[in-house]
Length: 450
Ligand SMILES: Cc1cc2nc3c(=O)[nH]c(=O)nc-3n(C[C@H](O)[C@H](O)[C@H](O)COP(=O)(O)OP(=O)(O)OC[C@H]3O[C@@H](n4cnc5c(N)ncnc54)[C@H](O)[C@@H]3O)c2cc1C
Image (tube, rainbow, N blue to C red; front, side, top):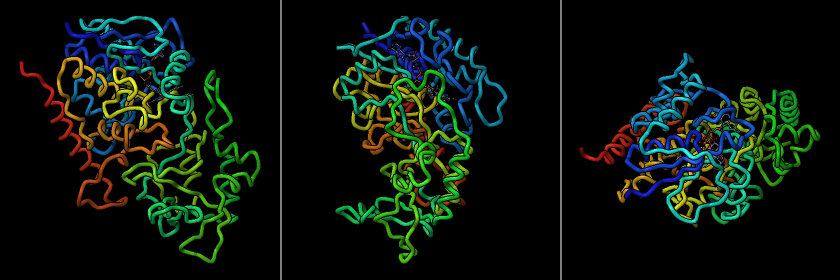
């Protein structure tokens, strides 16, 4: 008899994982604690509930990495994408849905599947044996969060994210910014030039502080701040504590010399640090923020060198339970210390409905193949699924790991294409063409002949 796959959490990831495994012929039990145990954000007992926006973001699968994830999930028979199409609302290029009928029909489809059963309970401990996927999301219940932290070590499980904005390296003006580590620290030339530095004069700094103080900020949701601590203050809160606070914190200019103007001492310096092994993404160090997205782009483009910056991800601080996946998970998304447990969804350090769902799809297929004794070919790195998995399980810097959206900065370059803004359209088309080809081959490799 085929062994059972247990999935904890019937959100975006758990629902998709269950569907993929059940379709492959594996019996699945979904353990979902709602409605018995509630979270501050969910309203219903349905599976795949959208807790806030009703949008799966861009559906453009030629020029947008999120749209590409949609395409890949559709191509792999994804349930969430199927039901999103059935409940689509007009929203320009975005895939927005009528949220309640959408999640109701995901629930109905899973209930009706002969290989799926749903058990309405909270799981409070890590299982000792069997096949498990934990997909309990950003609001993992307290008891299970404690059990995970006991296994991984408290420092490897975060309860809040503190996301600093991430900039595409190619959009930084290197005629203004320069490469240097503070005090030229480092054994190698690469380490001595590990940071990109953006200089500010005093008037530029003053104008920047004024803009930070005046910018629109997002509020924490009701109930979201429980357990929040003062450890990683938003930059605007630091600025509120005193106009000079940032200049003595993340924007301190000491130990840095502007290579374009060595005789001029900067009044303040904004530093960016490499965010992925490919070197295509840089995060703005210490710039976690609760400014609204529109305000962030405006304020951050005031930084000399970032006047034309393109952002792969904007900053934020949210209640968000997530693992330090680069250290804890193997490339099959299994917990290294307990490989009978996989993780999927937002708890793995991806961010958003679409990315979480995609990680559910991947984990569901991986678990099903393992149970059925089949060899699953590795997910190709040049697909959107592959780029994300590669990032969270190895490509990202473990020390500073924060949740990630899918974006083209995670993709390996396609040889022979022009860099910079001008070549962007051709480059994105080349990424998505390559991904579709690789993904189609990967999906076809798992089709069992009738
Ligand atoms: C307040 C808030 C607003 C958000 N807004 C957006 C947005 O607008 N757009 C967007 O793309 N993303 C948003 N997100 C992120 C979004 O929640 C995730 O991207 C997505 O829902 C994650 O999918 P998931 O399957 O990993 O987790 P979820 O969809 O949260 O599913 C996890 C499931 O696990 C269950 N569960 C938790 N602990 C246990 C347990 N111990 N036993 C059994 N069941 C358990 C929960 O009840 C839940 O159903 C928001 C998150 C929060 C917290």
